[in-house]
Image 1: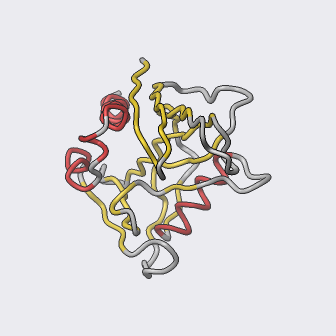
Image 2: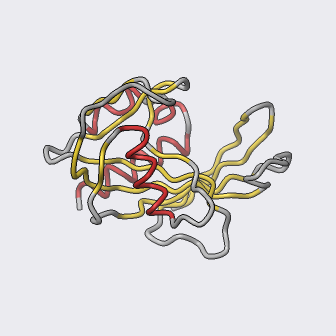
Length: 165
C-alpha cells in the first residue's frame, strides 16, 4: 500500500510517500528512525519536545545500524529501553528537491513497532520535556499528524493493523 501527499518543511516543497512494508529498501539514505513502543499493557510511549508530542526517534549517527539508532534515540529521548522483538511497519519516502543538507534530496524515515523493556525515572533534559504512555486509540489526540496528514494517518492505520495480528 502506497499513499502520497505534498507537504512543506522549512520553506521547501516535499513529496511524502508512505509505504507499508516489513523490509527496508536497499541503497536508500535513512534520515530518521522512530517507533510505536508498547508497554506490557499495550500502551504507546510518546514524548514531547519543542515540536509537540511525537514518537521517540531521531537521526542515525554515522556507523550505526537502524536498530542501534532506534535504541539510542529511545534511551536519549524517553529514558527507556526496548527488547529485540521489533517489526518494521513501513517507511516514509521523502522527495525533497531543494534540500542541500546532509539528508539529501531523497531519503527514508523508518517506522517500527517495538516493545519496552524498562521505563527508567524520567528527567526532562536535552530536547524532551515530557514522556507519557497512552492507549493506541488516543494517539491522534496527542500527535496531530496522525489526523491532519494523509501519510500520517496511513502510518497510524498501519500500526493499528499490525497490532491486530
